[in-house]
Image (cartoon, helix red, strand yellow):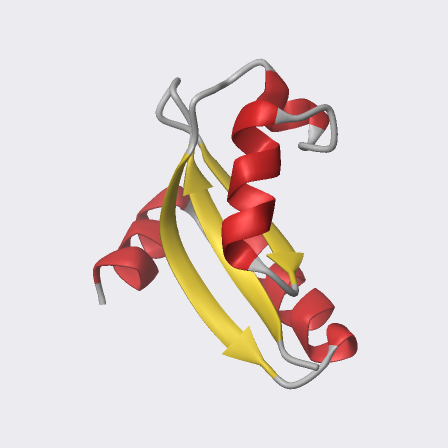
Length: 81
């Protein structure tokens, strides 16, 4: 099973990073469901800005952690690449 690391742009122009096995479903949850993250619930709507496919959940979690440690400008560089 493939996992994806993703970055969302929230309505307040902040960036949110997460992992999932189904990007479309997860973005829909962030925008329309109680299953969305607490952070994004009050910052709707969110827009998908970046996805990266990884092999497994462990790799996805490690990559998510690494991205979360980046500065905003570094994240924008990743998105624009």
